[in-house]
Amino acid sequence: MPEFLDIKYLDAGYRRSQVLFGVNIAIPLRGGVAILGRNGAGKSTLMKAIVGELPIWKGEVQFDGRDIKRCRTDERVRAGIGYVPQEHSVFARLSVRDNLAVGSVFHRDASAVDRVMGMFPKLGQRLDQPAGTLSGGERKMLAIARAMLGNPKLLLLDEPTEGVWIGVIEEITERLSELARDIAVIIVEQHLDLAMRIADHAYVLDRGRVALSGPSQQLRGDPRLLSYLAP
Image (tube, rainbow, N blue to C red; front, top):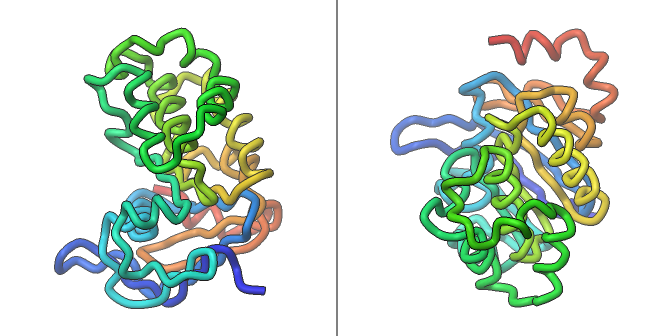
């Protein structure tokens, strides 16, 4: 049975600068997968290539049985890919309510709003507040909630706890762990312990190539892991 997201021999980059070299990644229908590596390893580039923000130079990308290599970003979102970028993840001048409305453009489901409010009750107390005035943790919650309103089958999260207070990190981790029981979740995360709590499987990138991969607990015991994560 083919994987839900199957990436083979992926090359990608920015203009003339190649960042990813022959990357192979297989993502199951459900469960968490961590993408690890030091800064500049190509993690964010991989996420952008999957969602369509960067063109794929070479290779194959199959999602849910469909070739999406040449699909636009909006087509990939309609197909079931949700994305929470590392930066600029919310519309700062819009209210929380209006940010959530943006997430409902492709999939209008009133019950979905209730579900995300249940995931992050704090957002329900700030619906009329401009998103730019939220704390760092609340903005991350809002970005995840907005992505979930698109009813994704696959959720991509790039550094979802960066700049977030420790108490809120725990809440976000619990919610993402719950989501990974129902859908596929790919997480780029610098906090190794957090990533391994969410992910059953992990890939380690080094200079744009997959250096290590395997079950999370197995990789935790691999003596090579820290050498690929060290600055």
